[in-house]
Amino acid sequence: MKRKRTKTNSLKFQYLPDDCWELIFKNMRIDDEDYHSLSLVSKQFLSITNRLRFSLTIKYCQTIQETLNLVRRFPNLTSLHLCGQGGDLDELLRQISTLSINLTSLKLYDLRTMPANGLLDFSQNIKTLTEVTCSKTEYLRTTHMFLIADCFPNLQLLDLNHCEDISQKGIYRVLYGCRNIRHLNLADCSGVKLHRMMKFQVLKLEVLNLSYSTVDDRTLNVITKSCTEILQLSLKFCDDVTYKGVKHVLQNCKQLKEINLNGVKDDTILSNLASMVLLRPSLRKITYGLGQCWVP
Image (cartoon, rainbow, N blue to C red; front, side, top):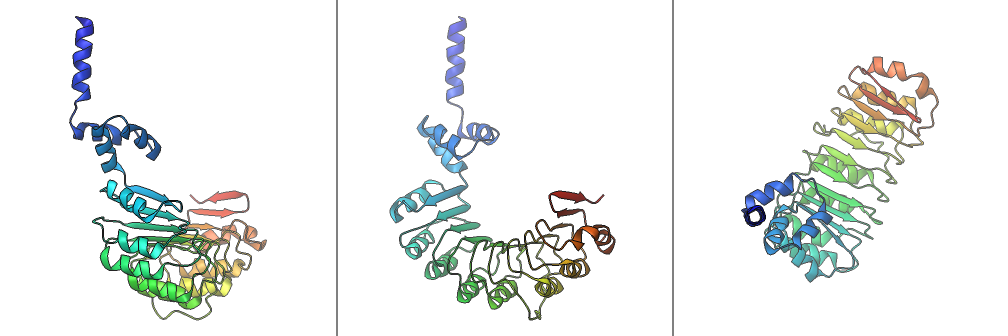
């Protein structure tokens, strides 16, 4: 009798409705690889795991048709990552934009140049995008920055880390055109020098990453006079930044909570840590050198 009861319970467990399995999978804290393994168990599990997949990474070795088939497979995708595409990325983006998907995040990695035509088509059909990443783009021209601002005015996050020749005009255009932007990443970007004051305010920008860039004291003053609501600022290994520039930030950003100065060469910063806290009482975390200074 005991063996028979076990078998009956096993059969009941096997035929749980999709909603129950979906709840179980969600609470298992599993990654994409685990979802793939589960999808091989049965058609039911395949259907459920397809619905639970929200992020997809496409590598350069896949064709346009293979990519489209993958995107169609996961109906609830919100984030798409395209890495080092060697084919016609403009055409791929154009075709993806014709699908019924509600993407909020598009990430492009390791590109020679921006797929301008593809992004234009993409923006005309997909209106839900709030995050764009164009990381390690070899040639990011001013016209590309204008394109991003014009195509995606509702952006909340723009990540351009490891891009070369970021221009002053391009940065101004993004900050002016994307008035909802909250997070801007220009880490490891060459050409980040702003020496002309902006004639507008960027009141929603909260997180700014300028690490490993060519930003200097004058640029910090220009940026923070217009972006006064910054909460987190990273200046890691910015060789041209001194305490004078940091002081501009503290004076202009009255809500600043965190600042990362790790790798900044000006030794006077260490002796002025206490002054920084007095100058900006909202500070809760200062990172400098190999350590961190937590402000109570």
